[in-house]
Image 1 (tube, rainbow, N blue to C red):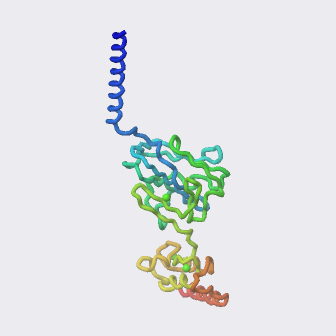
Image 2: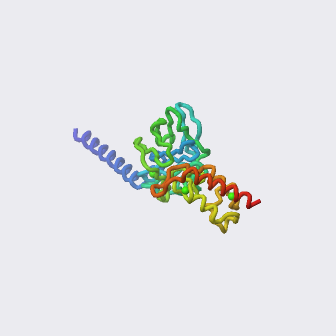
Length: 267
Ligand SMILES: [Ca+2]
Ligand SMILES: [Ca+2]
Ligand SMILES: [Ca+2]
């Protein structure tokens, strides 16, 4: 019947109008504000877990609403630590990283300013058979003790590949943590030797500052026997640089005598 046909056509047209109106309304609104689209991008730990960071990345905008959202560190099936976002992240978020690091990370050579601080050192257990970093409702990343490097230089990427650490914060600053420094290696060449001794002898009995701060590894503001002990006590540690040979034992004995003499001279 023509009437039915007309009514049907009117109804179809009404439905179409409503659907169109809905589409237009949705298009006018911003994308849904959330936090779900952060990925765990890179994870780092040194050998004892005292330095760790978790780096997130998002390819999407409107992901800044993190306040109160937890990231759990899970040891097999037990949550051992939880970081809870104290605030939202900066925005926009598309193309940005977030760096969440252990206390003290920022003070390390090669670090950058983290966006957030983990509640504890050893946030996750590098020795766990299965560690899971669970950014609840956003991303989950699991790995084992043979996956995560703990040499101080390499980190674990979210595809389980490893590479040189690259802690990146929201601002886009990229850090590079070096190998753990060697006690007594004052010039940081990877070896405790004559160069390090000379740094101390050059400013013996002086205050720091103005003396070279490298000569005061004990950090007490004075270049003295404790600093000398740091070098002599770790003598020959590390790998000699290619262009210098390790001193022979006889030389070391002489240096020890020199140390004794200096000690006496101070008193
Ligand atoms: Ca990175
Ligand atoms: Ca050295
Ligand atoms: Ca000192």
